[in-house]
View 1: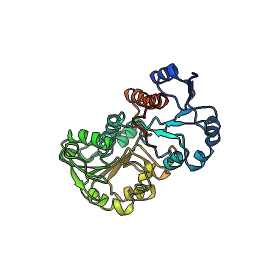
View 2: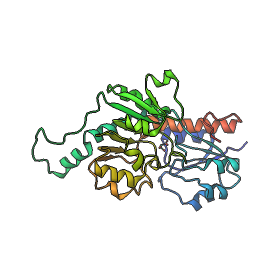
View 3: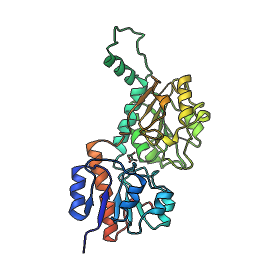
View 4: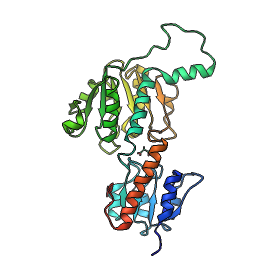
Length: 320
Ligand code: DGY
């Protein structure tokens, strides 16, 4: 039987490519370029499967144009807001993602963003590199301490839980909001709030971990931000779409939240220019899952799902 053809849209790790080539005809992308909608549609005529990243958009218009040859989209990402799942389901195209394997890497970045924002790391780095660091004073670059403060988790899924575990190591008290409370052994004493506003009122650090969906889009906005306590830090490692940029920028200018640490943005990489002038924002370019270990694990998980599909088994991470 001939091997199924898989399009691996972006530059993945050698281990992933080697494993993929052992079982599939692979179309890869060594130059790591990005693709237009027309190119994605054109490629769907040539392949049985696509292994994309969140950089390839499968909205309703694209999905309507995909060739019937395409059977499965095995995402190399946990987030699937780039995929219109109902439209893909309607077309009978299976969709999987890669949960679990990136939780710790993303949690590490959330903690880095919390500390970077709280301790003004970006500002300090820029000062040194500019050559303008002239003296030291006890009044110089004073930040806020996180030890012992309240750590609010918006979305107590796998990444939220992993981040909460790390925040506990800073002696932080964990609060969370989720659609439903999680089991006691998962909550590990974390305090549940049944509303976003309730969580924000109890969050000295608010860390966003919910997926971007119709119900979470823009839930961090002027009205909700107003509930944060003084000197709060906002952290986002989930998706930019959860935050209303205009509102967050205005709130940061007004000092509430006191600072933000952001790894994800609306319209990446062309992010809202209003962030650039703000010294109280510590920013990273969507690298939450970017560790060698996690990239290998994401590739393996995506291929496990692909292998299951082509073996006639149910992929563990099947979404539709
Ligand atoms: C994810 O897996 O969703 C990360 O944001 C990288 O795509």
